[in-house]
Image (cartoon, rainbow, N blue to C red; front, side):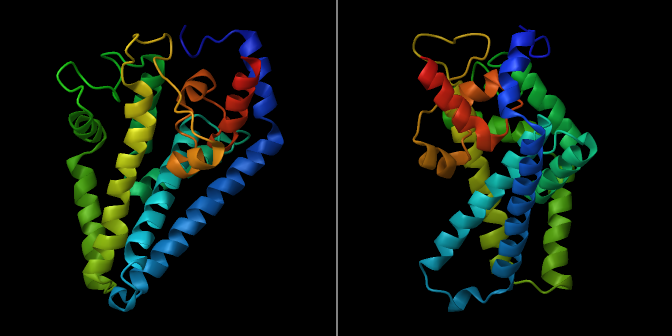
Length: 257
């Protein structure tokens, strides 16, 4: 079934997860994630890394990686209209802002490709899927990154890097540690928990129409792993439910089964 051709019962069922009040919550959560990312990055770029305890540097990188993942998950929710459902313009502005902050990705291009993924999962029309020669996870990851990256994006990021280094006198080491490495690690995290694990072919074959499977981690570890992106079957079944409500869908499905 085309994802845009849901029966009326689908929208009745999903309504319990998408109230107007939740739309305000979604906007507040998005603003909190963006604010944490901005504040954390500003602090990490301004400190003297040489004076930090050695163990604090990898912890800071992992923390910043987690916030980068939060940016992308926020953009992903915006692609489904879930950040601020009552105002699509604000919703799409948040989506455009978060993918730009993440790595200067073009929002409209990503939006079109993401909906292709939902309409044609695990097929030749799915931009997130491996091809016949790239079932290996590492090769799949590089194909995944090439699908969404561009020379224009790399040029823009290089300009920002050099402006920060030569105009604002930000340490090159700080930029590498806290601005370059975290989004790369975040992309691996998003790919592993949001694409590779949920969409790799099971031994028994794919179950249509979603061709996805859930990584059934406990709620806390699901959040730490990738903002509940591992509850992927639930996301494909209810794509308009925001990330922070997906555990409720998961629990309901477990209860009903």
